[in-house]
Image 1 (cartoon, protein in one colour):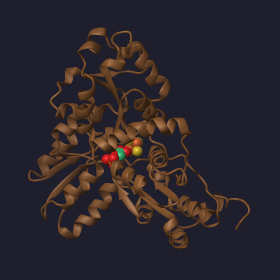
Image 2 (spheres, protein in one colour):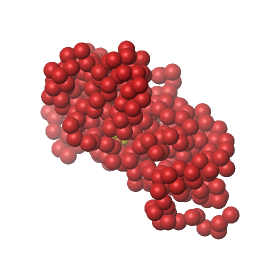
Image 3 (tube, helix red, strand yellow):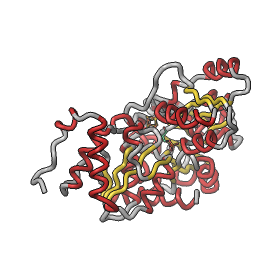
Image 4 (cartoon, protein in one colour):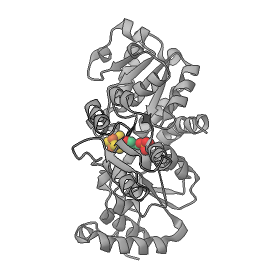
Length: 366
Ligand code: 13P
Ligand code: SF4
């Protein structure tokens, strides 16, 4: 065993193919001690090494059920945090590149959410009137906030069921950080747009009047995904004009207008299943991250299905893209040598409260 962790620098000069060989060898050496979880937005050269792939909900469940000593998460920071929170204390969650964050998750932090909660208490009693709901794309301490205040976590798969549960608890919801998932889900439940107000965290009182807060059913945090905001209704109109028989499917982090103009809306896993189950010859326009759309395009080609990316410009999730074969090879070879690098460890008190909100979610969406 090397005395110190192996340094990352030399890996930068390895080719993807060299990394591939070394990743496969390290996986073989680690055997059942290791599980690699891969989100659908990962690049192909990383995704191929995942033992389990999925959307955020599916991967949370895999993390909770895994027996492996090392859970290497090829995804972004909040996903590895969830793996740490839901796994046993003797298991280790690892993110191959610590700079793989989520720009949407960064749009809400505990100070801002606590300030919103305090300001809302000038108008009503949040503990009695508001269920806080955090999208899983958020820091562990926001999940902890929800756990401590009778709230819950949701993913793009279970958002509707989670909101239904939340309204059974209290008559309003504070939804963060993604306004679009909140609005799209609320609209599907029949909540009028004017009852879903946006909380601008840079403004006193969220930029809302007392009346707007009293009348609101959902208070939406002013957060968004930089990838999904690139999709526009005009791109759908153009596609429909060129392919009148074509189908449009979008992720619910896309805008309300895009989701309204789509034939189907759902999580990454839902998008994959829906396209796989479609008739041969179907032409699809897809509003989600480019790596997934390209993979679907290649997979569906032999079946005569066409899968087209919604935006004319390249927009991939730059933080998901940080996980590359070089970082994965470095991570795994360190594990083989007995060194844990890039461990994600949520402080115990935060993890305990966050687990309350995550367990609620898993129970509600069973
Ligand atoms: P899914 O849970 O649908 O995979 O979405 C995760 C995500 O970050 C989408 O941007
Ligand atoms: Fe975050 Fe958007 Fe990337 Fe998903 S696609 S991880 S929401 S930045």
